[in-house]
Image: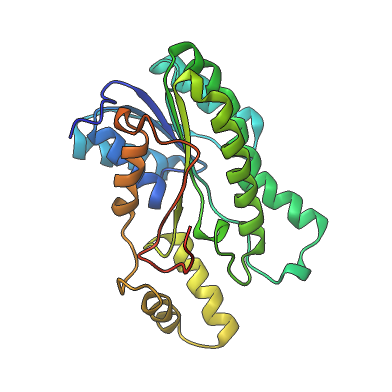
Length: 263
């Protein structure tokens, strides 16, 4: 299936590993011109080189800490100067610390919003005018199943990501007449560094081995295993494609059936 995005400029945040890397690779395979960022120069360069070797497509690596507005602007400006205005945006980023809802201070909450919510909103604001001028755009936020089914000890993640989903749903109504879609994907248990961190945290809380904590999570998934990053990337590529022009304002979980709700 031709997704209709060959040559379109795409930026993928926090893409040196995990879900972001998989999304960047999948978009590059579809012929998009991809820019990626990470705070770590060596990792983002290595990832860009790996994707280029696998696809034959040059990937622009940019060092940027997206919690810093000036670094975020640098990411957008460098991409625009090299490729042109981005028409595909995939927001992504690590999650805040785990803990009890009553354990966090105002400073903890502010830090969580600065890590999760504000970078995505700023990225969206930075690219939206170019999309409006082009009459075409795709905005895709990688969030978490916690926006639909909050998990114990992940209240910072649940609240800040849910705020982003609410913002995106409202935005989708405003920009739909411009040919711009805005959607969210909610990964469940995937083989990523973030999930491995969560398994270590769970093991420490329950005084069990990390392998046992991971096995418990996998058992809770009807498919019986964790997901692979490329399985999420396939959906991301479709939602970012011209084929998905009638899909907007959605929040789709990709979790092997782990979450237990109807909608």
